[in-house]
Amino acid sequence: MTETGAARVELGGRGSRVATGVAVLDHLLEELADAGGFALTLEIAPDEPEAEVERAGAALGESFAGLFDLPSAPGRGFGVAPADEALAMVVVERSGRPLVASNADLSSTRAGGLQADLAATMLDELARTAGLTIHVRLIEGESSQHVLSAIFKALGIALARSTRGES
Image 1 (cartoon, rainbow, N blue to C red):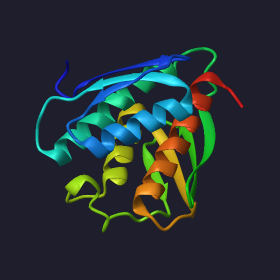
Image 2 (tube, rainbow, N blue to C red; image 1 turned 135 degrees about the vertical axis):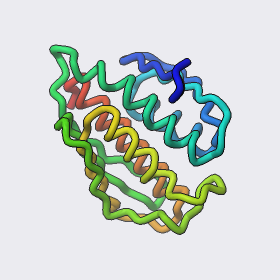
Image 3 (spheres, rainbow, N blue to C red; image 1 turned 90 degrees about the vertical axis):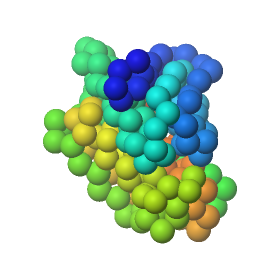
Image 4 (cartoon, one colour; image 1 turned 60 degrees about the vertical axis):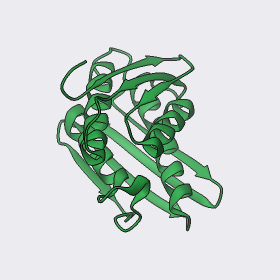
């Protein structure tokens, strides 16, 4: 395991094992992998919850960075996913200019008891580490749990399309 943690993504695989130390993040990352149709193995060394979220994002970014280098990877993709009343769209591009642009403000949610926005922290680290531009659009949604779920599912689909070129 590295300082940030260890992650492995198996395209086309099934069955994920995620242990970040933040139960809600574990669940969201399992949903991400399931929606994207890949197996994710991710383990983060115990630390403060905010640090565990950052390390999980960085480890995931490191894993995906190599997948973007494959000849078959188009380097961009999008995903749209529901979670009950919530609907989200995520677009990713391997731009080399890390950026997260989002209209979803979950800073007051405190998911998992965190002091920071779990989704923003995770996405910022993923974008930084993999060199991605990530656009998140919340189309509909009231429940923060459902909004997070829709965002992570849409991200999984977008990552799958950007690395495998699937439509």
